[in-house]
Length: 451
Image 1 (cartoon, one colour):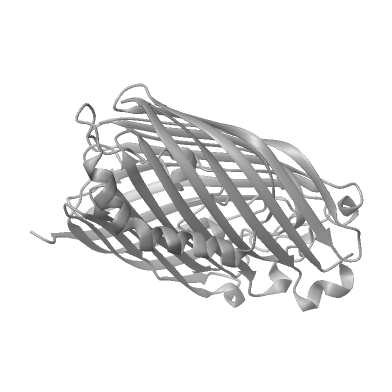
Image 2 (tube, helix red, strand yellow):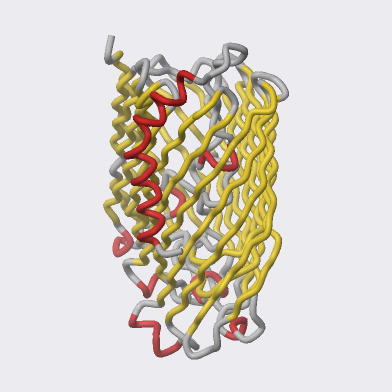
């Protein structure tokens, strides 16, 4: 199915939604008229990590942060010995979280100015913007739109993946298998979705995802490929009980990976295209109001073509398990997935096994601890293609503590680490480990809105 066909599917659902909502409402059984949730395997969203006192809506936040960090490997891939330096970052912040009876929207904008003490050629101005809107068109039809744009010189300062604890239950949520810690890069991910509850216990939905990854200075990311991703999904979900959901989803993705022109002469093949089609059966269980578990599994078909090699196609199982748990003082989210995918800096198609864990705990009234870890292992689906991109392993994580100095002033100290094994990617093969110790002082004003 082409990308145009998937776009038409979403548009058709949007156009028909008002009619469906009028017809479906009359047939709703009086036994159960509650609004259904969109289960984690098809929602595309992340499990919430905010603690009880932090989950505030209808507020505008404005602030300023100052960060200083020591990095022991700021220019990986340039030699056999790592180069260390101290950096200073000033980052203004503005964010909005607003909720009405039909609308929930969040907006985060955070530019950043980073200066290095001894390597001024790495000084950079960063831009980060994230937007998420959910709008209830009728009592049974909900539309959502989300976009995340990041132009950054270091993965350590991005909203994701290292500085946030976002854990999703969806196989189509992108996870970078390879992290270029200090490469100037641009990424954008946009998602539009629509769900329609056409009876008391049944729901359908569709979504479309578009994402890009660009390494703006190829000399900082030798061996890593730019990528463009287009994906679409359609699902049916049935509520077995108030706590149980079962359904099926069809997912399609097309990923194009290209080495920059400056690298094409040293790469064995410069372009690849990976197409996957997956049928997933999923089950979600809300054991309590604070604990949710989701499982999904099904067959996945992939076709990968990479010049000058012959295309490779086959069937393989895809699976994912995820969970989220919250109480007023603790939040935990975890996931594991097994899929065939591409992009994320790699060229070709790869069997990917990924696991993630996020933990947030309020130790005392004024002390909070955060921990996050992700692990991924990839292997090329074809022995022929493995001569250029055999795959590898990545492990990265963060541990930090936060303490408010006053109502508006907060300090955070922490440690981050990246460890990667990709023998054929010069950006990480020579000195694969990067460590950062950091301290951040932030000042924030909070103002109510929409009241």
